[in-house]
Amino acid sequence: MLTEAKAREILGGLKEPFLHKTLSELNAIEEIKIKEEKNHVSVKVDIAKTGTAEQLQLQTQIVNVLKEAGAATVGIRFGELSEEVLAAHRHSTEETEDKGLLSSKNTTFIAIASGKGGVGKSTVSVNLAVALARLGKKVGLIDADIYGFSVPDMMGITKRPVVRGEKIIPVERFGVQVISMGFFVEDNAPIIWRGPMLGKMLNSFFHEVEWGEVDYLLLDLPPGTGDVALDVHTMLPACKEIIVTTPHPTAAFVAARAGAMAVRTEHEILGVIENMAYFESKQTGEKEYVFGRGGGDKLAEELNTEVLGRLPLNQPDWNDEDFAPSVYQENHPIGKIYIDIAGKVTSLLKK
Image (cartoon, rainbow, N blue to C red):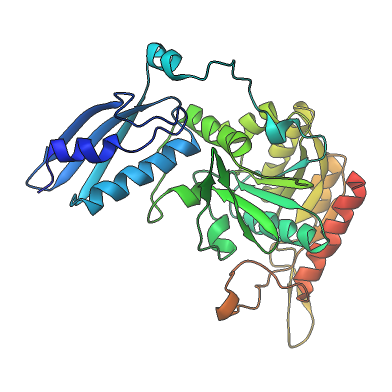
């Protein structure tokens, strides 16, 4: 049976991710409680900054070491170290904020937005990122839909990021560097966070991930105009946007709100992508406009931009050896449309 003393000894050897001192040295383990009947261990640990990717990494470490020591379940709460402790252990030199990617003049940020869910925004984000990589560009993709993360699954990513020094190394797939909240939760667990925590996580994706040299960084935004979308507009004043809609009039009407938000915050709209534009029969070649027609054109006109491409209803050819359920192959008809859209994007941005 795991005891409180043993649990404290095990956790005491783990390093706090910002000050690089052990939890024991920092006296950062505030509380340990063990419910013997359920073999449940509950801990409270203080760190320098909460709501970060580093916190999630430490959380995973704590769960793993306690379960290896015999705990059946683990509950964790995080607090912040006192100013006195932080001052005593900070480096003597004044720390300057590393803006990293946010201050890069060589990286273009492109947010993929939609007014509502279910229009295929994440599918567009994934395939546009892959298409840009196929054109020889260095591409990163942030799955910023923190509640509804889906990019790792769509791209068939089974690996997780690793930490090197103080940076998280994104996972690369199809030539695209990817980071997602999905990498930091277990068993598809729900994320129960309020707005400020979402902003902190998004900030971590910019500051604490080792992106290297990136030509384009795409952000798969959550649908609508909520907290994360607002944070992106604040953090990235020079971000470009692509609005995804279906041809249905209601979808286009709702998508106009996301476009209006971009305009009001002086984000340049690169264009509109109309997804599920039609269904083409393999037998007859006839096109059926399942969701109607004209939504993309009407939205582009309202936002004073252009339709970058129209994508039909279809699915990729799945390959069990290289499984990625939402990525179209380069020679697939829809894969070719994405290459055309990527070419238009690079032409508009002149890079």
